[in-house]
Image 1 (tube, rainbow, N blue to C red):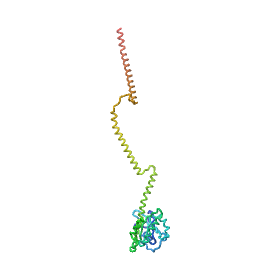
Image 2: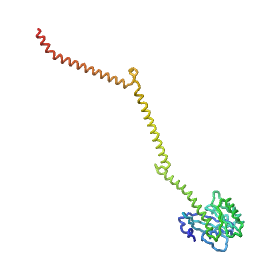
Image 3: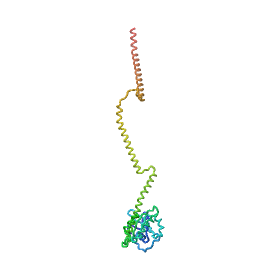
Image 4: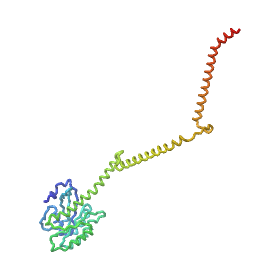
Length: 305
């Protein structure tokens, strides 16, 4: 048993499970392929037609993942083909098996591919597996013809021999890599939808794009306001000297400002007050002078009389 393929039940709980169907004509090598893959070696056994369906499982250990494979060996007899549809609907991949020494099994691949994709929307991964590649002297199907068939079906091509475990593993490892790649492509989308839902459920929460938009708008607003202030200061500096140096009109009749009328009234009142105070002071001074002069006048009057 290789280092990358161990006990079939080990690690299946944390591995990615997939279903793989083996389809092809009777006696083309489907059962031998499944047993060689599961056991890691060629299992010598007397040929017996598969009674409807056979099943085996194994965990494939990749460098960064594990894939738990359910392998279904479907009988090639025509009376069992009516049972194929539910299995084909739920499987991840189909291995179309043929015998390189039997051209009839190769020609029937189109029929099996059509059965695997019979339901609308059912598009499993396809791979062609040519068995008995070690019997070069008995080959009836050339590799070029097999490549053309694989191209027409949109499938990968593998030619294997049950006596070579390394080649037996190739189609199954190909499907394991394809399953992991498909999971990586679908997981970020689901995670992204969940994150968006959680973000929408949190009040006041914003995404990184929203925060960037808010920052950009704030920067634009600050720049526009600063520009307006600069223009206002410049215009004020240019207009103020012109206003201050403009000639003033002294035409009182043309000045209708309420503030100026008020100032005039206040000025008149101040002038009237000043005049009153001046008159009072003058009268007081005259009265004092008369008081000082009155005795002298009386004495002068007495002398002259």
